[in-house]
Image 1 (cartoon, one colour):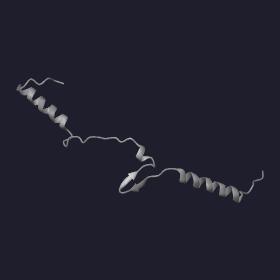
Image 2 (cartoon, one colour):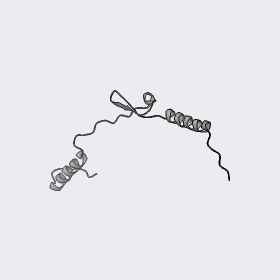
Image 3 (spheres, helix red, strand yellow):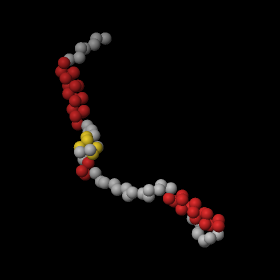
Image 4 (cartoon, one colour):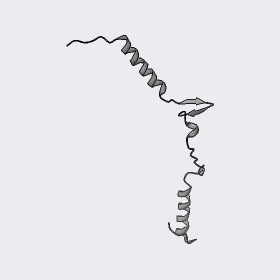
Length: 80
């Protein structure tokens, strides 16, 4: 079995293809303190998440208060 030496042209072609693939892929860029994930960030749809309550366990606290009131018989709070 005889092996062929790798020619200079095939090496340059491989390096050129690798450079082209690396240059054509997207990367993150930081502009004005904002991280931009792609070149198409202006066309992305925005998602808005409204601020929640400061006290994260508000539903649990309300349920505990309703339970205490039901146990004391002070009010007719319907069970959920």
